[in-house]
Image (cartoon, rainbow, N blue to C red; front, side, top):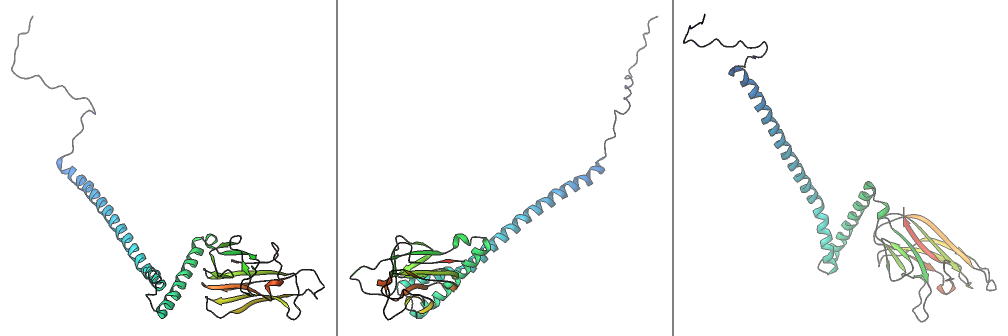
Length: 259
């Protein structure tokens, strides 16, 4: 028997499988979560911008402080150039030199703190030069600048060494005499003066003796010690008579090095 029953009603829906249907959250549940996420993003942006602003302000302040601290030092160095051109008065130049010494002291302390002391050291080992006949007589030994060794130490008038850095120095001299003097002891003295026109004073003195003129031996006057020196201090070696000195290589030397 054929069923010819017809109806206009739609067929019933297929029942869903178990666990395949999840209840979607209502619109009221998503608003707090969205607000929380937006708040976190805004907070991170504020912190990021604040960090950049702080770093910029700190770096700018550091450079301003650095410029203000060393601006005076740069002005002093510039005015020293004017002293060389005789634009400044003598009194002003003396004050500038004192301030320049203070700058050098700062540099020395900074070198010790940063560990750059050895590279900033000073030393000199001078080789004696035999006097040329016909030159004006002098009792100060002259040095062969071309064969001597110097680091951060200048020379003046072939006989004097000029200190550039303040500090403690080990100073030594060795003078060999091969001839005797009938009236005066054979002596060598390390002289110290403040600048080119400063008063000279004996820093060290050493003697040696050959006996009499029949002796043909060589005697050596050696001296050494540690002394505190300032920039522009000058050192030289004075002897009884340069014509009595032995000028063989290695017999007569003079030197210093910064501790």
